[in-house]
Length: 151
Image (cartoon, rainbow, N blue to C red; front, side):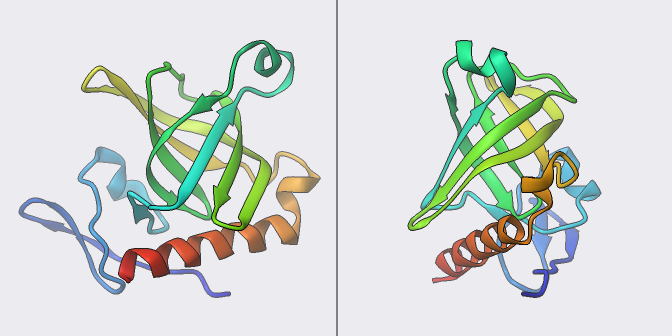
């Protein structure tokens, strides 16, 4: 399935998007993105945990998802995360579910008394992350969310 390629350009009220018309947030990292993201996706559920023993003693964090693509996501949380921190995600969208998605925090900032974090999935983390089936599931979730947002 081809990559959904979207160009971003400056606009008066943040960022506008060419191609598939979806509104983009005006956060600082938008200029650095190589891949477009679906803003405020509906029907997406994501749970984050820390890998290893630390994840077993801390409860999973339910997140408010701000944007999503097959390569990463942004979320808002009450918990503080640190740039470079590794997390494991369970991502569900209707009948699609993927577990064990490894990602790391690329940026974290305080936004209105909550933490806003950007995540990049780490496709070199392990054999599961390098698998074609995971790549296909994430692409399928992305396409389904894109179709929902344009409906």
